[in-house]
Structure formats: C-alpha cells, structure tokens
Amino acid sequence: MTATKRLVPATKTARQRLLVDLLARHPVRSQGDLATLLAEAGLTVTQTTLSRDLVELDAVKVRDGSGALVYAVPGEGGDRRPVPAQDSAAASGRLARLSGELLVSASASANLVVLRTPPGAAQFFASALDHADLSAVLGTIAGDDTVLVITRDATGGGAVAGRLVALAEAGDGATSVVSTTTDTQETP
Image (tube, rainbow, N blue to C red; front, side):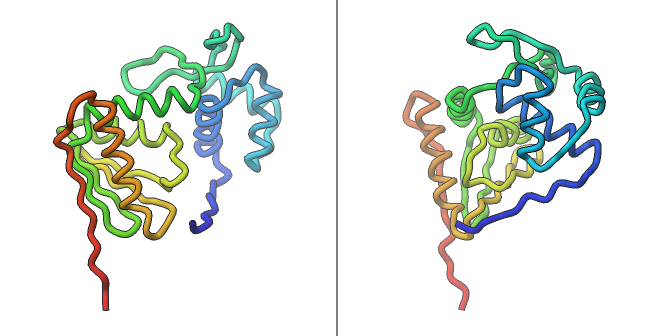
C-alpha cells in the first residue's frame, strides 16, 4: 500500500471540518478531550477558538448509546438533529444497507472505481462511503448518479469495487443484479 500524507490548510474551514470529523468518529465528553484529539491530528488551538468553533457548528451535548453526555453536531442534509459519534460497526451497517438500496453497478480500473446509483443518490452514497472510514479509500467525488472512488493502493480499485458489490448483495437481502467490471488492460 502506498503511504499518503493528508495536507490540511491552516484555515477556519479546514479546522471546523476536522472538528466535525472528530466528533463523528469519537465520543468527546469535554473541550479538553477535543483539544487533545486536535493536537494528535497536528492542530493546536486555544480554548476560546475551540469554544467559538463549537458554537458556529451548532454542536451540543447529547446522550450517546451508553448514556454519557458527548458533543454532537447536526446531521447532514435535512436532518438537523445532533448525532452522536457512530461506532465503526454502525457506519459499516449503514454502508451495507445503502449499498443494497443504491448501488446499481461498480466498475474498476487501477485505483479508480466508478459507482452508478439511481439519479440523485450519488452524493448521499458518497457521504456514506466517506463516513464508513474505509482505509482503502482515499476519497470520493459525486455527481448526480455517479460516484468516483479513488483508492490508496495503485491497484486497489478492483478490491474496493468487489467489497462494495458484496456489501450491496448482503445489504439487499436478496440475490442482487449489481454488476462489477474491472479493466485489466495493460499498457505496452
């Protein structure tokens, strides 16, 4: 696997996006815990800046599954209710369910995967892929009915496409008609 370094600009927008990502992935009970997570990610902020960011993001404390109070930010799209951090099993279950409902086809070539969805569903499906935190996936780009997935490994597209098709078949609960193709042409 090829190592990739994530470059994050030192901007307010990038910092707040990192905050949202951290709150979605970790049960954060205090601003001190959040400052520690930010420092581990290579970003040092003052308590004042952190407090302002949480207010601007509409972060509030909610009870998680165990009853503990944790920070949460409103969900995406029309769902504006604060959502506590999901464990990886819940995110994987969501991805399996959405794959079964939305994945029409998957095609791979080298480190690229092209996923087809019903019209209007690509951005929603790409968001589920991003939140599932798949280590093999570098990132996604979505249009109306197409998602482009870029994998970390130069030849990882076929494996990711196969995994998503398997998730679709498992999440659908029936024999699926989802197809997968892999481009195996070699260049001279």
